[in-house]
Image (cartoon, rainbow, N blue to C red; front, side, top):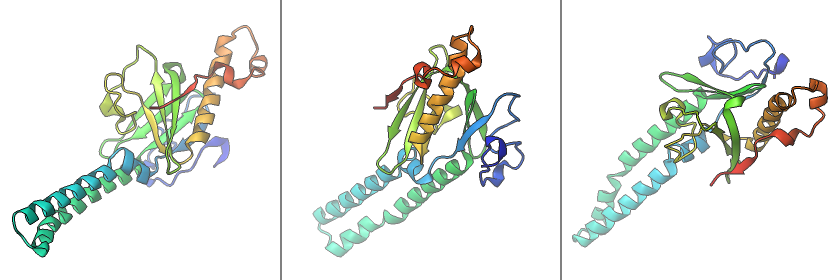
Length: 231
């Protein structure tokens, strides 16, 4: 971590940006608290469904083998017929793995003292800006591999296009998409940091008659949106 709280990430793709992952310099008084990227293996499994695709092809090969045996072919002939799907399966899985790696490499999540930003996309990268005042709540879901997701619940009147945030979105939230910091290696730590940042931004606004020093003495969790479980 360099001075001022900035994180130097090894992304040469962002050489034209003032800060990796940010389209412009932050306004005066706003500080960068954290930056990170998804883990590509977790992204491959949960966003690109590599594991499910592999299981699908395995079932398809078993079905081809069984149907060939039922048609009177020998074990070797049936196995050869079923194995004809192997190149197709490997090609499909490799493409998905490459896409997951590319998206993980090109994605940078940023948390500042005033907003969350998600820089993503391979062919046409874009940055989605989510000010704290637009975020009503957050959730935390931890996975068995040690990674986790943090979906963000936006204000009721806010809508965001699916194509602008995919694959950085909570699954199956189609009518009202929720942006999500996905497949984070240290999701619990990031959730704690985000919770504290949301509190720090909202406590002074809720107590306009107090000096910032007085407001900061209040318990930090008091004005923080609850981290609700993801189901």
